[in-house]
Amino acid sequence: MSRSTESVAAIVVAAGSGVRLGREIPKAAIEIGGVPIVVRAVRSMISGGADRVIVAAPEAWVERFAQWLAAYGDRVTVIAGGLLRQDSVRLALGYVGNAGIVLVHDAARALAPAFIVDRVIEAIRGGAQAVIPVVPQIDSLRRTRKGSTVPVDRSSYLRVQTPQGFTTAVIKRAHEAVGTTEYTDDATMCEAVGAEVTTVPGDGLAFKITEPMDLVLAEVIARGE
Ligand code: CTP
Ligand code: MG
Image (tube, rainbow, N blue to C red; front, side, top):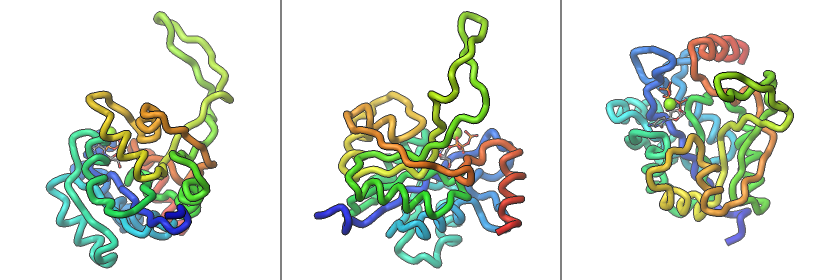
């Protein structure tokens, strides 16, 4: 089948607890402008061109997340995630069905604009095996060495965002091969099984809500929508 007709399944990983935010509820359940983070992330995937979305949720929240997303009908499936992020992705990969293209997106990047989703999908349709959105490193960087620090050239570093895009074959192969090695993103796993990683421009709005300050920023952005 040509890549132009392949359907797109987006995996939204939302099973983390959000320790660094320090709230009582999981990060993906926190509301921004009255809309839960997980709902915003799913909305962004669908608006950007995903045909279906699989959400990996904290086990105790599966039903509630499914209720919040009920309006999407069978386009959205909520499952229980795993211990590590990569476990959540692996479990969700069991639900992508016949989709030829898989996106993996952090729910925590709740404000990722639809145009990035579209950009990633188009890069895969254009022939790439693995695609990552990247943004320049804006702070100066230093590397720790022997109890001291040395400067590094920041222009040779990029920050990696999600959604990341893959052919279904590549991402499945990567997750089957992973073993016990821990990875923070899927493109790196795909590279480990020989896939070439392609970059597309990311966007500031795809920042990851990680620390309390990020939630303040997200609220302000949501107010301006
Ligand atoms: N994630 C997941 N399953 C896990 C761990 C993380 O689905 N076992 C998801 C999170 O829900 C989040 C994304 O992976 O959307 C990126 O992880 P991160 O920002 O680290 O979120 P948390 O792990 O929830 O936060 P923290 O590390 O502060 O606990
Ligand atoms: Mg985490």
